[in-house]
Length: 402
Image (cartoon, rainbow, N blue to C red):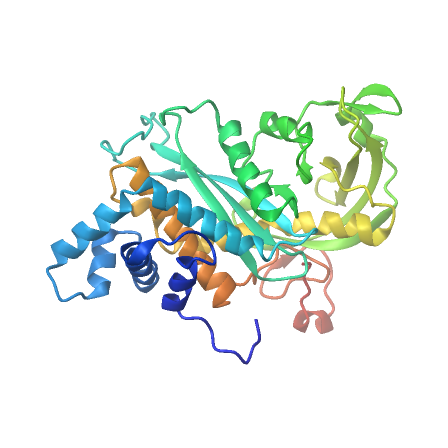
């Protein structure tokens, strides 16, 4: 978007989202509802219908506005149509090397009892739904685009397992992007069993960290343990980087900037009973506190002979959490767990509308760019503990990776 051009207003964005450019006509009622929800949610930073209704300041009783919003929210066809429109709009920004970051989290509803399909609570876990989101992000950009979000629980009719729900979502993204982009799986939110199902899927282009996953792979026509093979990979390229560890993490009493030597190498592998060429990346990190650790990664990217190809891909994965954390902070600013709708269909549309608001703020208005980076090429600034000596001239020029 041209920096000199006026920023699209929320009303303009709602008009675009409901236009025939992105799908069939939603009608005047559909457009008004989508516009009111997007504008109301942005004004109030809330998903609560009462708050949204108040912000619209309609010249009718508040109860009537609330009732209209609640009635229109109970529309699974609109939820599907709006999700597809947001996905088509976001897919325009996806290129062949765009990261499609897949993240799974819980939407917990403490003390809730009457929400449809809400799982029963246990002694230590609040009842909650699972939410899977896909975010598009180019490695050299601070801007990301929410593509799609889906919500479910194990009580929803037809539910088989979480892996199937995630895979269905990935298929929708593949269709919308015409197979462009590379799926980056957030290893902090997916189980090893799920990741094992991903690396054997012939339709996905992906990069996945495989820490703690027991897996056999084919190397030079022999079946070998991935865990053992990764130890023997020659790490051709490396560099020192700086990892910012927040206070309270790993026992740190204060935020700490840790100097880490990262080095990586790759081997050609295949999965058993498959002819698809993959690469096993050994990412080895070394610091004075824990020594050297070898982490396996598997990817469909095969052009990894150069420093730029291999280390560029590794650093792109290391900045994944920066995007996830930024998106989470924006999402949490709306307090999504405060939803008060009681039916599953209303909840799905509410989650989709929230994605629409975030899409507008981050991608269109540019007000939510990634600013904080856990890994950096140069020391992080600020008052932090450091595991290295820092010359004064470095304090004013913190670096980052994209």
